[in-house]
Length: 464
Ligand code: URP
Ligand code: ZN
Ligand code: ZN
Image 1: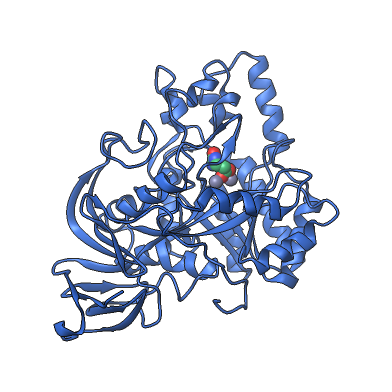
Image 2: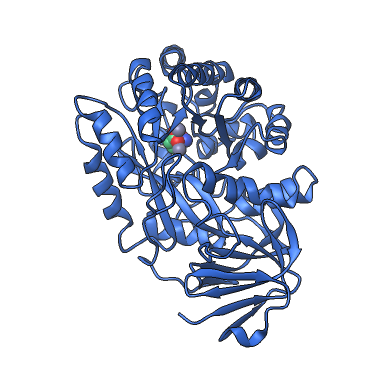
C-alpha cells in the first residue's frame, strides 16, 4: 500500500490539539508534524478545517447475538459498516460461553460470525456463564488468544447470572492472568421478584421493564462487585452504568485509590425513563438493561465523564427490529428482546451534546471514545493514538457538518433509531482503517472481511 498524507488538519488526541500533517506508510502512521512535504506520499487527503482524530473504539457491542429466541439484527458486516460511517474503527464484541461448554467453543463460534464479514478490526470479550471444572483454565486459554477481558452477569438468573462465588473466583484468577473482569451490575434475584410481582398484578407494558429494575438494584450490585474485586486485589470495570447511585459507588472506590473503572452509554446521557411510556408499544424500542432512568441522573453522568469518575463511553449496541423482534413482548415486557441500536451515532452524539455544549473538552471526547478504551482493553498504543507506529485508524472529522439522526438514513440494520430527530453538529467525513479509506462522505469503500481479529494484551502485557 502506497503512502498517504493527510494535510492541513488539526490533530486532536487525548492529550493535545495541534496543527499537523499525518504521514501514513502502509497500515501504520509514520510521522506526525507540521509541514510534511506533499511529495512524501502518492495520495494526499486535504483536511483543512477538519479535526484528525484516532478512530473511535466501541468497547461494548453485541453483533449477531442470540437473545430470547432471536438474534440481534446487525451482524458483523452491517454493524461494523455502520460503525465506520460514524467514525468508529474498532469494536470489542462479546462471545458468549453457553452453559456446560468450553470457552473455546464460544470463541470459535464468534470468530466464524466475524470471518468474511467484519469491515473494521475487532476484539472479543468472553461472557462467562459457567466456570465448571475447567473454567479457570479456560480463562487463561482465552487470555492467550487475546481475549483479555471477561463479562460476568449479576442479573438474568437461570440464563446468564453467576453467583458471587463464581464472580470471586473469576476475579481472583485475573490476579494471575492479567485479564479484566467487566460486570453487568444489577441485583438479578431482587429484580426477578419485582418482575414476578408486576406480572401477577397484570403490569405487562414496557414501562414495567424499567420500574422493576430500580437504580438501587444497580448500585447495590456495583458496590458488591467492587467489594469482591477489592478483596481479590484486582481491577474491575462496570459496564453500562446508568445512575447517580451507581456512579457514587465507583467514585467512592476510586477516591480510595481502587482500580475501579466504568463506562456509560449515549442513551443514559441523553434519554430518560419516559421513553418507555411511548404509546402503541413504542416504549419497547427503549427496553434494554439496565433501563433508562429519570432525567436527573443525566447531568451526574456527564459530570462523571468530565472528572474521570467514568472513563469510557461505549454503545452497548444490541439492535432488535421493532416490527418483528421487539413485538415478541407485546403482551409481556419480559419477552421484549433487551437491547437498543447506537453503534453509528456515538461520536456524533458525544461530540455535539458533550463538546459543543461545553460539558467536555475536545481532548476528553477523544479520550473517552477512543484512547481510554484502547488502554483499558489492551490495545494501546496500536489503537487510540496518533503517533508513529500506531495503526492508521483515523477519522477526519468535520466539526461543522450538520447531521440529523434518522432511521431513514442510518446504516444500521434496524427499523428505528433511539435518537430519531436528534440534530448534531459534527460528523465523520473520511474514515481510514489501517491506512485504507473505508468511508468517504456517503460512500462506503471498505470490504466485508477486511477487519482483523485483535489479540489484546492482558494487564502488564505488551501489545503483540
Ligand atoms: O439490554 C442490553 N443491554 N442487552 C445487551 C446485553 C447486555 O446486558 O449488555
Ligand atoms: Zn450487560
Ligand atoms: Zn451489553
